[in-house]
Length: 196
Image 1 (cartoon, rainbow, N blue to C red):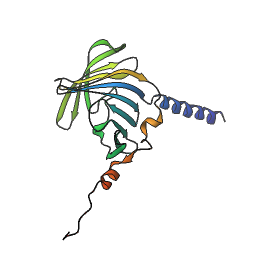
Image 2 (cartoon, helix red, strand yellow; image 1 turned 45 degrees about the vertical axis):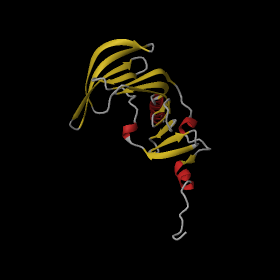
Image 3 (cartoon, rainbow, N blue to C red; image 1 turned 120 degrees about the vertical axis):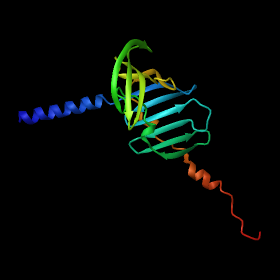
Image 4 (spheres, rainbow, N blue to C red; image 1 turned 180 degrees about the vertical axis):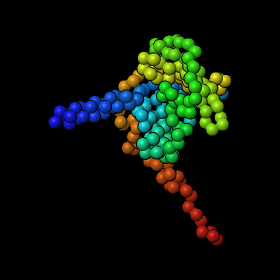
């Protein structure tokens, strides 16, 4: 009986610890690519995230649902959405270890947004392509506050990072939004019969 009780306690403990390590946060993200800067608000939970874009364009919000293998692009002004398939290219780089990482060297330390960080030079390899990045990893929250390609052509920085529970409704389609495909169907001109 004691063995069963001990096994149950250990199993529950591991389950609770695993749940406690799930990454949930909100942050402001600044991305610089080839001299162009864009800003967005990020709401993140391990297998889903919401990006509220601060750019002038038709898409105001993107909801990535890795669990459903879809991305919903919301066109708020029109109250429509477009569904596209999920791709691993859409993943946010918010883990300590980078995908394809082959080496990591500590370069220094500094504070970013009030968090102590360690600056690393990280080398990744995908097939024959090798990339070198600088990563500022916050030691108190184990979060990459900034990531930059060594050549400076690409930088992503997170500000106002708050590790906290993120509500489910942020990852759902708004009830009053219609699929963009339905909008396109209603906009098709009627075909005229020949001879008219």
